[in-house]
Length: 140
Image 1 (cartoon, one colour):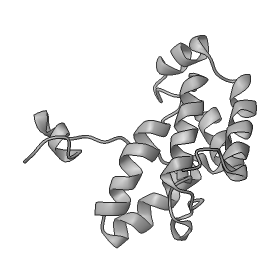
Image 2 (cartoon, helix red, strand yellow; image 1 turned 180 degrees about the vertical axis):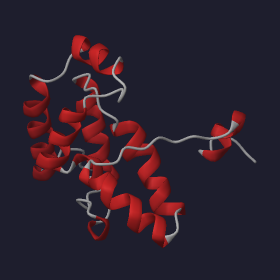
Image 3 (cartoon, helix red, strand yellow; image 1 turned 135 degrees about the horizontal axis):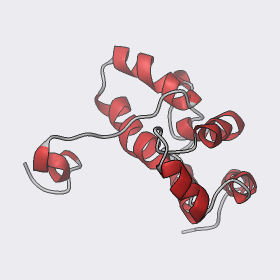
Image 4 (cartoon, one colour; image 1 turned 90 degrees about the horizontal axis):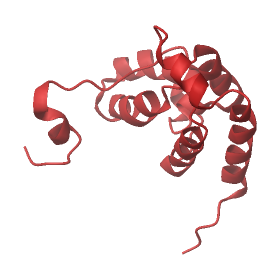
């Protein structure tokens, strides 16, 4: 099994590091967390415009880039390494795949292009103690 990064994956990593270098860190993360948005909307839009990051693993028919979850995981690794104040995990890792898998076609058509464009963020909300079951971590 070859675990080396592809040229595309290496480019995603390099571009993310370059973009995040000056715009992230502990102080910026704390400052963004204290805002009403809870993240840096300007950084989020830059990540959307330059890399298509919010829609990295979404199909092109919904405005996404069409990459695999491997590229999304790489993006999560880089944004975490930089302490990027962004809604990547909540929006692109948790909510968007569930909308894609479980949403109606109308819901997918309405929500996923906005997520891919970075104009809509999302979060996963599950009632009470049902989160582990919803994520298939435990039985019904």
